[in-house]
Image 1 (tube, rainbow, N blue to C red):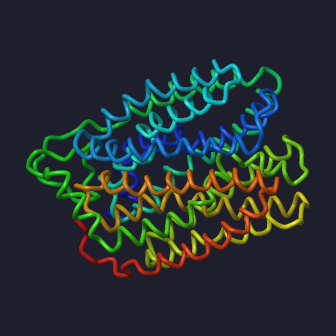
Image 2: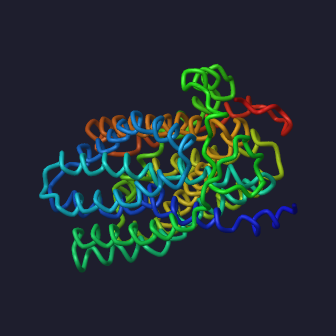
Image 3: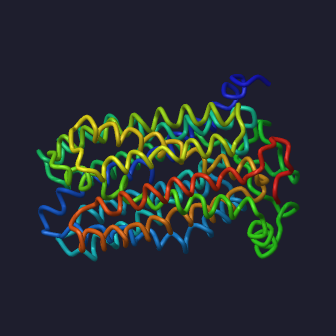
Length: 414
């Protein structure tokens, strides 16, 4: 089967994964930053206090391994269906808050936990099942959807909130996620009952691990944790993803800290989102053609310069915009890379089990980053010290990926 022919023959699982995960947690990372300045202004929360919202990431350390494991056993359809109907309820919880910061933290925790059921953690299994030659490009398409939507939604959402209020904004997102989620679930190919693990690229329906393929969880986790590749990915991603709160819940606050208006910040987010699209396309095409460790290192190192520039006193809108574009290039690649690395080095039988563990490190890094940002803001009343720190962390973490196997013919783990 040809490279583009694989895309053509698997258009249904590709569309399901793109729409399902594209309107879940990756999109919420953009929309959350739009609400942040409005909530902080109305309820009088301090910036250092609001930075602690990143601690909600710790809740995912409990649920992600279970979601990954159950997806391997039950398939994508059942997990995504549950999340599709629960996610809108979380946004209703956001809309009902009255100013208590703990209420916001509870709602944010619920979104992260429930949203993981419709996130790339679950939906990218459809890509791992059905693609081989064009895996990188397929993941690029999947992960471009939230960025493309954000480019259109973020400025409009900010305008909508300013004219109709943030409560109406949350209600609109709840309705949007419900409708798109249902469509995505209907596109998922129905499961098979084969007792033999299919090879990627065979155009299989939603495939769960069966009894014949099942291994005890203790055995599977042992195989994963004894793998050198797993720890290279784990530690490298941890160091690179300490930046996560800066482009999630804190993005608009960080940009406004550079003496620009909220609307200008929202407009810059559009450029950032465009950067994620460019980064995903470039990374996805490169992964299908060049050595995985080299592509990974080059893709992840880009924000180091962007965050360094943001930490300086060079506050011209053009420089801030260029810096966020560099950050966007890597954030776009990051979404592809995590799923691709697991599909590249681990067998399909333990794909979601492994991916759940890798996603844990991303949320753990996010939580630690939130604490460090909060401390930085409290002590220095500025994002700059943390921006310089995370710039160095990203540079060092990116180099670790060079220790992954270069050969495309190495035996997969599991």
